[in-house]
Length: 146
Image (cartoon, rainbow, N blue to C red; front, side, top):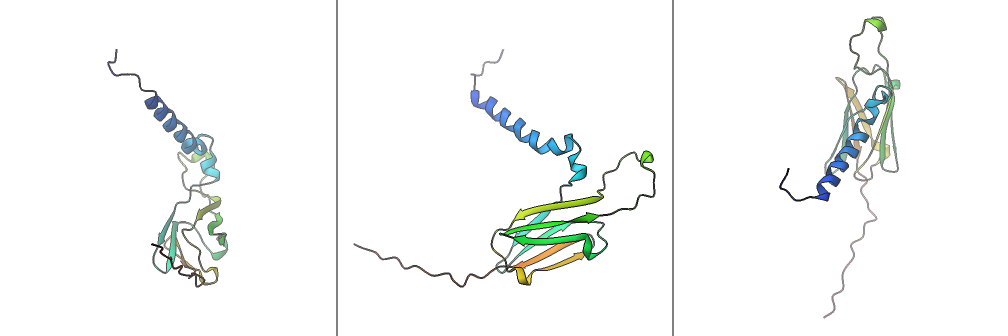
């Protein structure tokens, strides 16, 4: 028998972790991770631009990927087609994705959509988005009363 006092918050913490794990593991439990792969995106911010990079091995041409920015949300979508030289029943494990994908991330600040540049090299898609320089910004003076 434990000599520690009963702590209801410890059980709530355990319940919260179980709940989070359910939603994290949910797609894999039902095979949805094969239909909608988790495309990982790194988003970095410098003084003048936002840079997004993601690994997308297997793209063959420009038409395989679409980049869209609306309402401060970057969406990358497209398809990866891999030829299957081996019959399906001979596979022991198949983890490489083939099919349609889509991923959206919210950007940390507004960007100039007209000057976005994207490059694809060695399986990595890099998107450089210049920040919108808000020229409407106005400094507000504070009046002090004594």
